[in-house]
Length: 252
Image (tube, rainbow, N blue to C red):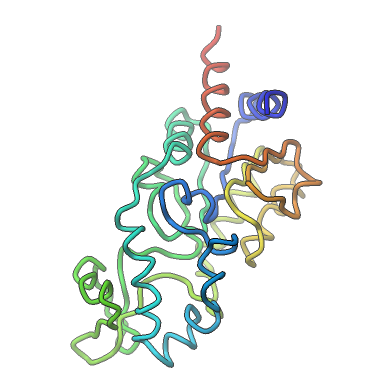
């Protein structure tokens, strides 16, 4: 990885506006299972059957039984070295924003401040009947048991995550587009780039002439278009890139 690593370091060192796009593989080293690997969640479940908006409305308890298996590792997870490295790069004034498909909040726990959560988060939940929003902490005991928490109006609370067959918030998507239109380097890390519309977002930056680094264990469709492709664990590759770039920046 030596030559590839140095090329990635050089790109980060010279960039002025870095955007980082992350997916499930970014949190896998923190103990949260990904979705599409041989050991991922979709190897055991059909996403349309358990994690779609239709499935939630059809069988809320079934949805929460599925979610309960994901809650324990998310609640227990802590930022891994990749999260911490991205936060350090942002603190150094180099990262314009982090666009993530993850719902675990680990980027914020690591210290990143400009985080755009495309697929929502688990910090709150909204009643599907009356629209009342509450902190998710108060609902966690029921959620962990696989029971659908209900509002005082008898409606079912849905966590504020984007499910399959549910559109992304347009305001958030606009902000992500703005970031990508203004960046000069995009780092895509820990994502297979197989879920729309997130998989198409890098094309916005590429059309504007931004450079591209891809860090992912498996190949992605963007590999042929990237300046640097590193097929390695994000928890080792991303910190190495950031450490090298920050060291270069501090040299007189």
